[in-house]
Length: 247
Ligand SMILES: Nc1ncnc2c1ncn2[C@@H]1O[C@H](COP(=O)(O)OP(=O)(O)OP(=O)(O)O)[C@@H](O)[C@H]1O
Ligand SMILES: [Mg+2]
Image 1 (cartoon, rainbow, N blue to C red):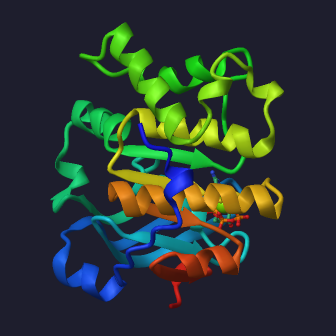
Image 2: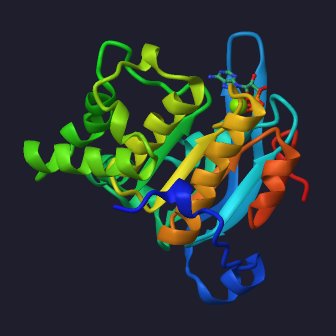
């Protein structure tokens, strides 16, 4: 298995324009609105967002705190529902999927990476990476283990499979979280400030890993970041302000 980190110097560039011309839309948001209602206040977190993401694109999303970036990722990742508007995955409206189909989509098509890793501290690195595969029908114990090893190999952590999260650096923990997403072989990775808790060296390592995944495996990636430099390494930068796309 090839280590993506070691290969990330190879950079075949596909521009957003060429992708738009050749690749099919994998995620389409039409007039998406998300309103949070609490007892005292109504917040319009997303205000008529229209967005198309093509297969194989690496898109970054920037914007001030509270402008709706995490809400957007939750909605794209089917973790939350919009108040109004239509989401299409592979050209099919998500509303037309049954609950069972949606659960399968969430589990198989999409991998999540969060700023704070979301690892389970009582489980070994290997068990953390295997965990999402437990919920997947048709994947037996041996295949689970093989996939988890392969994913950890890809992120350069083969030597740490029996460690626990507390015994790893922040960058290594985030690599475990990425391996956990990869074990499911997702077409789309949604990353919410994946380098937000890391120093610049470790942050760059994670960024290289994501760039390698996108370039070598064609994984579609949508990443929220506060780091301009990182955002400029991706193919497309979308800026949000107050729940709307401004650029
Ligand atoms: N569950 C919730 N209930 C009520 N309001 C919410 C909820 N989740 C988010 N909000 C509000 O929606 C808006 C958008 O929040 P969101 O978390 O998407 O922002 P963000 O752009 O990710 O910010 P940050 O950069 O700080 O992570 C904010 O005003 C927030 O207070
Ligand atoms: Mg956020």
